[in-house]
Image (cartoon, rainbow over all chains, first blue to last red; front, side, top):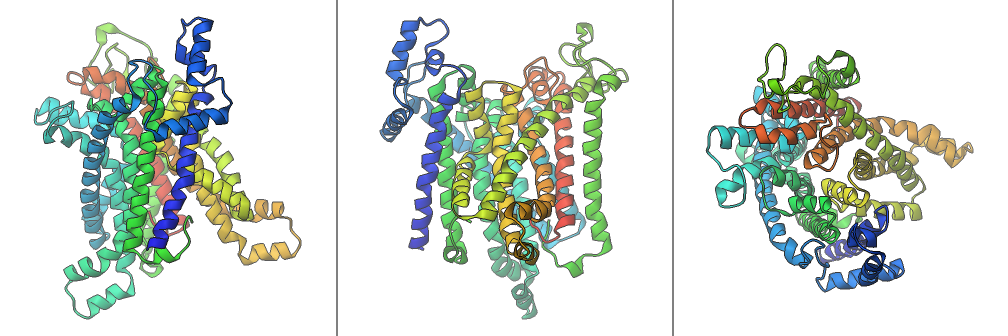
Length: 310
Length: 283
């Protein structure tokens, strides 16, 4: 186990390096002069040069990158061009809000997704199975922001049961969590169903049935445990995608998260904020996937003995 | 979609699966044709405003009602596909043209190429798709061409991985070994054997990628990072409709339904093709 974890964590290095290069290069891929962009349209040539010197943009690219990484390691992501505040201080509360939303959406996706998948699989080809399968297909096809608007329309504007915007208590979390979680729920449901059906056809399940175990025991003890293995990976990947998808839900429900903040920063050309936000989210995604991979290898020992990376 | 064994697959099941693909093809065709012929067949122009008729409920004159400027929502929904569909398709085609060759090289030649290409792919996969799209928009500026590029960038790894796995598998098959022992060059083997045999998987993947691409176009436009008002684009229309949701929910409902139907069509098509091609594949 330790060896596998070691190899898997070692892979983290190159990926994080790549992520930092991509985020660093964002500024340099911008058409035009980044110093001019940062200084603003009305800046004099002297001011532009001043900005260039302060940001170190007059240095060779690799020196700039090394300086960028050194600052990052000290927790310095620069300052917002708009407010002059530390980017990290600016991002952190919003990041926590996004994590809260993402976690809630994951709970929705996993509990409902697993339930739907298991119910579908144990009643294959039944009316319920067909209905749930169609529902899952619609789920992966529905634009989350539209779903959010429709839920808001029904439960907030028409029925008045739930608040339509902002962050607060549990009630505020319900609609955004459902909105964000629906896509992942549908993906998990489809994966669970397929995986359960696969396992239910295996001989050891038939053997368990043949020796007279109750169906409930067969499902819980023998089938579900093995069926969950591929589902775990999907859950990990989906959790990461939720971090990105959160931006739409945050916009719809005026949730004060990192995604909405990033979009506003792009429109305001506040580059350090965008870079910082993208970096934090990407690193979170990478770490979540690492944790899931390690979890996966605990559940399924076969993984540890096969090669990493394939 | 499932891993059931072949003997349990009756003709009825096959039909049921094909029915899904057929419905999907029908939905996609419907949406594409509506978009293509929108200028000829839509009852009104997409930008024909009539403030006197603003926020009308759906009726005989305006099947989907009118928006806050009195524009016909039905006509705008038809025109919306003229933006969303090409932007998504262009992005996916670009991803195919980059991802497929890279996957072929990584899988067929292996070694050094494989390591480099797969490490780069890992880095792209370290970003959630939507986040990558946001990062690219911020670097290249807000434009529809940027949206296509974003779709291309996050779709490319799907082809690299898929085609690489296929190339790895096919490389060791008898017919490839036979071709090689007959003196076929690598280039010939890739073109004649590996690529044609990967084609169905590429098409299936493309169908799913166009679905996700269309969702992305509208999502970015909804955020104000794609098509801009007053363009009749589904995401833009939704963003516009938010202010009047309480009095005129239909203005928000129909553009969203249009996206749903289009994406659902492609997902059904992709699922159906996948099942038809490989009944054992899981998803």
